[in-house]
Image 1 (cartoon, rainbow, N blue to C red):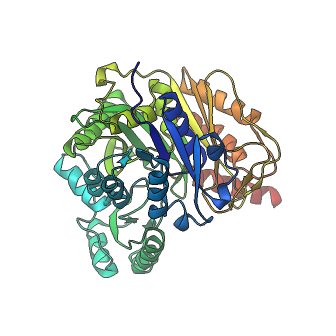
Image 2: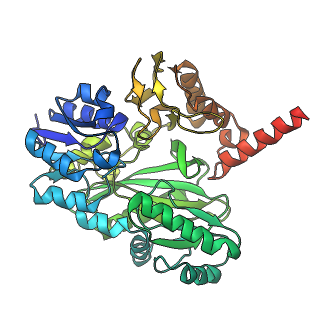
Image 3: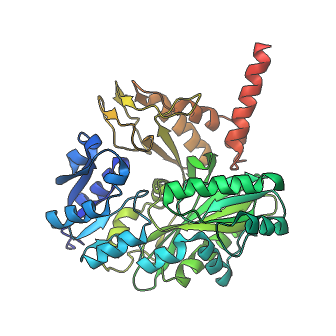
Length: 461
């Protein structure tokens, strides 16, 4: 029997992802340390870890983003490694570097990997160098709106303004008219400076009705890199993913293979040594795909890949961080069936505003091929300080149509009382003809909502 890769791991996160990492660690025989803010005293990840440390007040900047408090907690508890989950400090190269300086293993890629791919403009240049297609865009990034406008005019409108740092759609602006460019550029710069302390932006050509397809890769310290297939994450609202699925529908095997090869080629070019995701825009009209960025961390939607490949990405990530060679080869990875994930958020279904509060009645769905990743329980009070994600419902079936039906049944079975959620929105998307036939794109949800609003006006008239 293998010795555990580490004796003790601190999880520098909260909610469902903290629980996901805790479970993986416990299955590997690793003791766990949960950290939490005062708002998360009663959180499930605190209850299920072997130890817990309060690291500050509810504000994330003073707790989950407080590097000094996290390092102090790791040292005080004797944790050998820190797993950052996703979000918060998961892609912060400075945090990873401090971990190394303190003799603590950062469960993630190398600092060099994070620096190379954390800057989206630099990542684009690396992709071009590796013969991976990229969306036409600016060759450099900056904060000069007039200079950026000149580049935008060269590539032609509409264009997309994007932040160099961070993610989650922060600061992203679609500009159709050159007259609006400077105003929106400056607005985006202020937004990302407030969110990521980095106002730098770059510009790329906007592709209408594109699909968002990403490839999961994992590498080790011995220059081995493999892919675990792709996911379609096109069903989004304001660049926030709502439904993800694997494999991507309505894509030829030849295109799928080219995308996989491009992702592995770029990951190998930087000697990538952890789990990570390369994101692409796919234009189904031309059958062309374009690299947009790399997430050097675990993704929220990793369960759909685990379901179709029967792998445990988190365990593999931990083993790789401990210095072991990949336990899979590309030829040993097998794909079977179709998986769909629906993100259940605590939010008003009409205004989409967060809806924190006390959960009064909770029953997660179950059955063959149904998985629920969640950090809540009955009578748990969802704090207003963090992301509104309550649960991820993931289903797996032999075909996409069967997976859609299974997801609809799971949502009908799911009970989350006392708060408002977006479950009804998921039902409407899953039963929409475009989704049912795999005709998905990043603006599909906007179109569905616009059609519903128009129909409501027609009925009222």
